[in-house]
Amino acid sequence: MKKVLMIVLLMFSGFVSLAQGVPTDYLSAEFHKERREAVREMMPANTVAVFFSNPVRNRANDVNYIYHQDPDFYYLTGYKEPNGVLLIFSEDQKDQDGKLYNESIFVQQRDARREQWDGKRLGAEGAKNVLGFKKAYEGSQFIALDMDFKEFDKVLFFDFKNDYRNTGEEADLFNLIKAFKVKTDYPSDYNPTKQKLYSMIASANAENSREIVETVRKYIKYYKDLQKDPLLTGFASANNDGLRSEIKERVNLMLKSNNLDSAIITEIMNTLRETKTTEEIKLLRKAVEISAVGQIEVMKAMHPNMSEAEIQGIHEFVYKKYGSEYEGYPSIVGGGNNGCILHYIENNKTMVGNDLVLMDLGAEYHGYTADVTRTIPANGKFTKEQKLIYDIVYDAQEAGIKASKVGASFQAPGTAAREVVTKRLMSLGIAADAKEARTYFPHGTSHYLGLDVHDKGTYQRFKANTVITVEPGIYIPEGSKCDKKWWGIAVRIEDDILITEDGPVNLSAMAPRTTESIEATMTAPSPLDDFVLPGLD
Ligand code: GLY
Ligand code: MN
Ligand code: MN
Image (cartoon, rainbow, N blue to C red; front, side):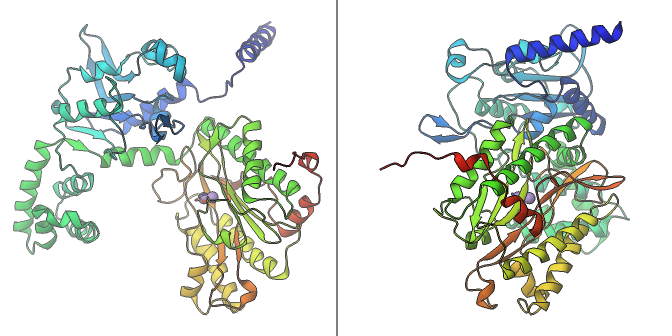
């Protein structure tokens, strides 16, 4: 009976979602709530964390770029609109009625006229009913909020990037941030790095003092504006413990007058977002599989008189067909020498000809992005030189994937891949030594992947349920020091690897990766073979 009821319920929910015609596989409200709980657990006592929505960015005149939520804000709320603020408290707070709460959200107010032009808004009621917040208000109530932020030991927040505009609307991001700055006495010269170093100095003791001096020295050498701070330069150059404790006292006074902190929340979000939950892995897997299908369809459709933009269009059409909302980053399609530009996004070559085509694209599905690269010969057959270079990159990638194990250092895949590339480029006479080999493989091999293409993480030893890319490459631009026959060859192979206790799992394995399987796939017919458009004058 229970089973029958279940089936009826499932059919009904399927019917409802079909009737509405919108996807239903978003992250759940429970996921976001549980993530807020995880943040709270990592917050020091008597602190508040304040998060802001991403700014709306202007494209030109009255047209804005498509809005994209700040990934941390999305991770913690599910809210997709601009002009939002989230507060998470380390302990329960009391509201005016004496009721306890430990988080609240402030969102855009409903506005029939604006919604007619720009689309539906959730409003405070929606934030309660859909996102599951018990305390949800309009942005204007954040501006009016009577809360003494000085009462907290620390106010955790990400510093602002100054890329938001004053739109003239009452509770736009400009006014929300302005209100935050007034409430927290935000100093006009606030510098999160300086604040972080002050906190480190405040924690100095006999054991860690040496290490902290070294860190402060490194920072002030790199960030010139920190050299103007007498406390930092004083601590870095102090030659006795007495002087160091005197500076520590003065730093403590400075910290008391300003409880803003950007280092703790950075550490918390890096730690949480590095490893993925089951719900997240499901969405990531989908984004990656969609991207792999895009690569397969392009392999089938590719011919030498295609343009880079047309190839890009096929990938992106496949993404849309599977319900991906965006590309996770601007698509890279580089024919021949264009592939040597690592983030080439002009994609304006009108014919790829007989060159290799490097295609680095990723679908974004419900916030999670893939990042997959395949490099294929436009005419379906690798030349001898192209294959020699391709196979080095392939072997380097294999070594990198094998090294992507729980407990290994984040650098392990890069070290393994670079060793293969260096040795083989030297044996082919393309590079004289490791330093020269590096000029042909000038980037890192891995980054975390998730809500951001270059996702947040700690860059410490690998943990289970982390997703990374393994993406070695060899790029030999025209005019390089080696034999001309190698010029214009650019190869990158990039796969998305889920690190598990049982070893690495290649989520993008579906997209052919060996020269043989690529060539075989390229002989298969494509539905686009018959897609012929009329010529234009
Ligand atoms: N698509 C950017 C990267 O591979 O990191
Ligand atoms: Mn990448
Ligand atoms: Mn990439």
